Length: 117
Image (cartoon, rainbow, N blue to C red; front, side, top):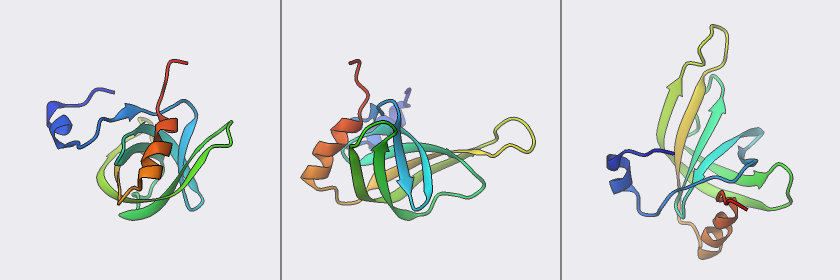
């Protein structure tokens, strides 16, 4: 994922592309996990509604048992894009800050990074 120099300067921790089939879920909603760092997440979803300002997010994989529940997150960025054709749901790109991640959470977040293996 290409990031502008301005965004790089604001980040406290390096951001990594998310692993294949990694999802973020909150309540009864789920979305694609785009990227992950020790203190934040990037997600993408389709819908009419804006993402909540603060929310508890669970990370999981489609075909694996590993789940990281209860990441309390605060929205720091949100962009709504048209999905091209009339009648289609808009696409949202959201940046989330993980509020007060524990060392255990940071360690478990590494499982959600993309690797070449």
